[in-house]
Length: 239
Image 1: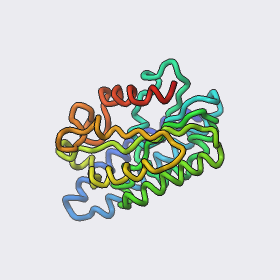
Image 2: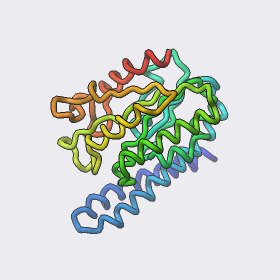
Image 3: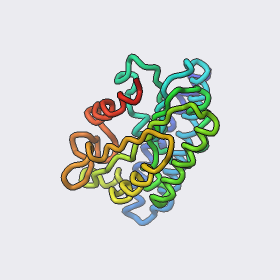
Image 4: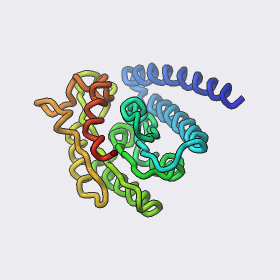
């Protein structure tokens, strides 16, 4: 019965997502962006809650002591089980999530799994959805690291810097994100103590400082070639 309802809810969310996307684009044209933004926020909230519920159920069957990947859609779309077949890995990414959202799901996403290591990458959606500052994003990530260490001091945290974007491919998807703010955040993240910090900006950026076209789907999200590059950088920290 649970899975029947799960399928129904997922189907409904897909329909809502399509409607939201169309309404959002229409809102930009007709000047009703506020209502479209509210609808988008409602959709993201519904998807967030459904994913957290799924994590709670999956955690009952998970092997403790593995590696947890935590973040937003860039993490959610990361096929970690294919790229790390010899490691015990869990994906706890949620599309559209922010640093504020992650703060509220640390139990379901990290602590319940009792991991040895956490790969954390979050913050790009704060720039587009929360309209906040680089300083606030960095502070929130610092707070998340502190909360993890306070409850589980032996967890090793591998913190990735936010990846650059490319506004020339699909400005709608990239939204208000920009590489200047992203690099400000990453510079601040380097000062967080007791983490392994990985900044892939140099590897991902072209001569103009934009996300290289060969590594992205539409200027924001990462494609398979991009994830393959990420794996080569992460692997030394995970073995």
